[in-house]
Length: 309
Image 1 (cartoon, rainbow, N blue to C red):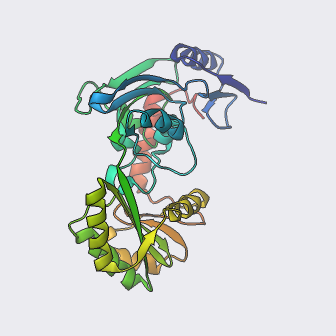
Image 2 (cartoon, helix red, strand yellow; image 1 turned 120 degrees about the vertical axis):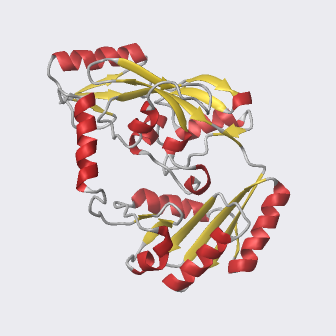
């Protein structure tokens, strides 16, 4: 049976990894697979919140919704909405995102700094407290999507956004791949700035508008005049979340060839501008072999002894 180690400080995390490396034990972070399983459950504090700069420094074990509950008291939010309620560390390790990716990007776009613990126990930091910062190597972006294979993410600097005053969701029926492409591109080409543009394929185009009340109303009416449809209470986003959470594959596609992509899909949540679909079944790794080889060389450079499982 693996040993579970719940770390409460960065120093403790470093000691766990140093000890495991010295004993030639494998370590996995927040999942099985290692002789030692490290949990960041106790690393759940907001260390700094600079409301005037729209930034915060948090520990990696805090969960997205819990963080947003604290930030909401100040009228701010982390504009990240992946399915479930993952930790900030898990969001970085998986480069997770949700429908708001359309406007705010993925986790890697919202991380401005990190403190990590490498496989040999070395503590390293990069980035800073402000959005425009060029200090040191950008470990935050490098660790996004690393799946825990480069090191343990301990602290994170985050870019925040104001909580929108109003939100409205438009849902329009779609009849075919061609109809979906026509209506979607009409929204993307219009003078509107949606927070999310998703397709629940087959069947519906879903568009979220957020911001000031008057601006949201105006944009909603522009979009409805282009694609028809009706307002939804917002419950449809729960369906989007559930279907994304249940997906086992994530194929990518050229957004300019949306009609062709939809013709090849039976059931999917399609994040249009990002060129990604969430499908029920597994799919082949879309990465080029050279990209996979590069990722492995980076992993070997960070963990030459193969401590991290």
